[in-house]
Length: 248
Image (cartoon, rainbow, N blue to C red; front, side, top):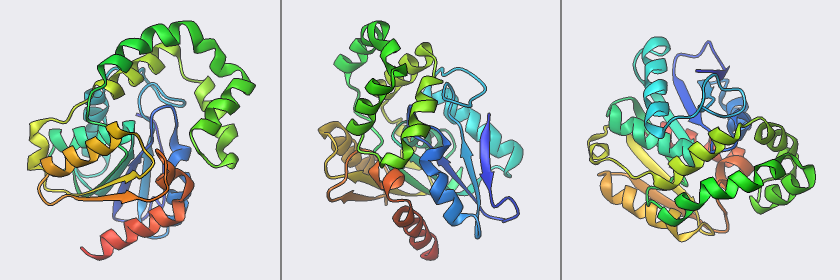
């Protein structure tokens, strides 16, 4: 597994798992803000720009990151956060290893399968994949994501680096994922976030996860779209992590 690391000398570790189609720049600013107090590790999910293997499944990504934690981080970490696909990987990690972390933050993680979208992904990308390398098309797609303009070059570079097979694979996994019963046994304090302007599937998922994990806390942030919290508001996201850890 490839990754980026900040604050390597600090004893407590935070892992942050980027969203689908993105890469470590999703949490780059948070890592810079937190590195003076924590060791911050940003894994690159399989099949994404800079990764060392193709995407197979959310379950395999979760198992791979757990193996990395076992090999390099003593078997558990202080906190794991994840956005969208990264949030699904986080939820799967909590299911596979109940004590993999003490605190967890899942942002905009879908756990309601979307069968229609899942069925259309393959045909849609089979005919339109080449468009993502056209800068004009990429700009239109980027604007639809409501991300801050300064991130466009990162987005365009890393989107172009994703193989079609990987993009289809992780999009299909994202639209098919559902939480496992074992997640109810996690010992992590789970915090759930979503933007008020997200689609119904995400907001339904927020409630489902909250109901499945005893003691979990959910927050719907007014005015925000999918992924905006961690990507567009890194200072507030880092402050939120600080507040969670200060209460421990």
